[in-house]
Image (cartoon, rainbow, N blue to C red; front, side, top):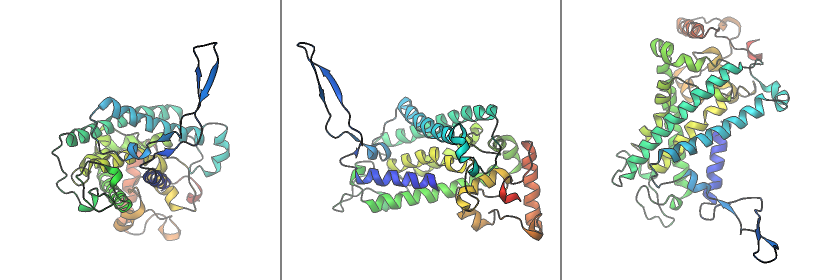
Length: 342
């Protein structure tokens, strides 16, 4: 939920400053040498700004794979590396250790493998984004199932064509669009994740992600290549009902959102902070990116107490047996490590 909050905050700041740009809080000074006498003088650019809105909500198709890949790799490297350095490397790691859900540290060899797999995932995501840009670059494509509320409207209520000027969209459109994207992504992730836990797909595909049973930031996108294709497919599928700017936001979200659930840190007092860690520790519960679908479908994990410690009805026993089988595939047991296991 923290990652979602950060993304929402970024979009809000970008929207408020969509016409003027986000002010850069530090002055930039340029030293210029004169041609006579070697004297110098300084000039300060006027109010440097960052076009964050243009970077996040961009309706202009740019079917350039190198540019797309560079942007996505930069986003992934910066965010995931900062998270790993702050949480797992000295001297800060000793300060935050008490919030580590599993006190053990993942082996370096696994982290290296996670990084390599994640880079492959960023390439897959960039390939999907290229396809989306090429689709809209034709100038004739309009999402066949596009919701009317997602169409951009100017401040005077005049509807514009999809794919024109996103700066004209009222805040309500952006908020509703963000909610639609989140609900779609949540549903897509839950049901494809359940599918990946069926016996054949788990054994041949999804078990590679579950090798990170004690997750760290780089675990988030550490997957089999086929799972990358499945996971990131939510964005091109959204192109059936969403304009380009919304598809772009969704794809960036798919790159960023795994960071929160795989950090390996949280509080046992807050379910949202340990929800996905429980999935990695128990294997067959908490499939969703949020508790919504797990609650609806009865797959949410509840701390075993008393008579429920090993399941007292066939559905629970069956799920526990499947969890044990899946854990064995990666050489561990399906048990929670941490205060909640006591």
